[in-house]
Image 1 (cartoon, rainbow, N blue to C red):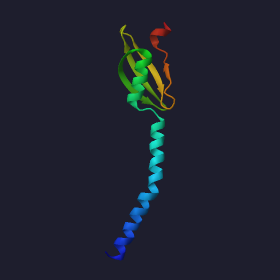
Image 2 (cartoon, one colour):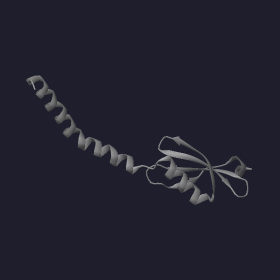
Image 3 (cartoon, helix red, strand yellow):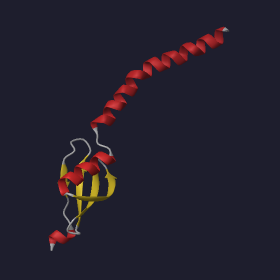
Image 4 (cartoon, rainbow, N blue to C red):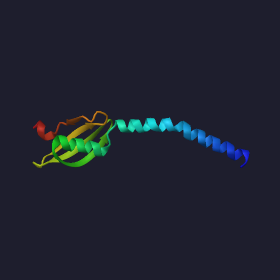
Length: 94
């Protein structure tokens, strides 16, 4: 191997070693937040129905659930805390 190849191998090794902690931090942040599937499961548990749709909106998921009564309700699931809150529906305002 020539000197240039050895230098490149050293740089690649240095980059791999130094990026390890950064990647670990990114993985921890991802684990701190819920994904779409987890948000759907929490909404389904709370509302007791079939999940129709999950939309991402900022720091929450908006989940639409079809209840056994045939009524569709929307709930917001906070990405960090996992807290489920029912949103104000047009039908409930009447």
